[in-house]
Image (cartoon, rainbow, N blue to C red; front, side):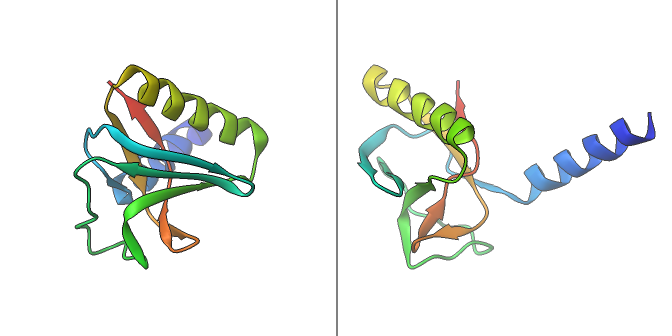
Length: 105
């Protein structure tokens, strides 16, 4: 029981420190050999806790195939359907905001 409570606390703490894009439609999605670049319509990072070289785009680095494929699938599905996404970020990747979580509503 203590392990479950500790895990829940850590999970909530991590999510609380992440910034979110807010619901925005995807303007551009570009697959590259090392990941995927995503630009949202009408988005510029205004969160002072995360400042990257380029604050108007996101990059999802290819690290783990399973995690990568899940998030890319969600991004592509939203793009093709014209549905908005909400992307969390708390660091930079290759100068862009690093994609953490992808949420569809």
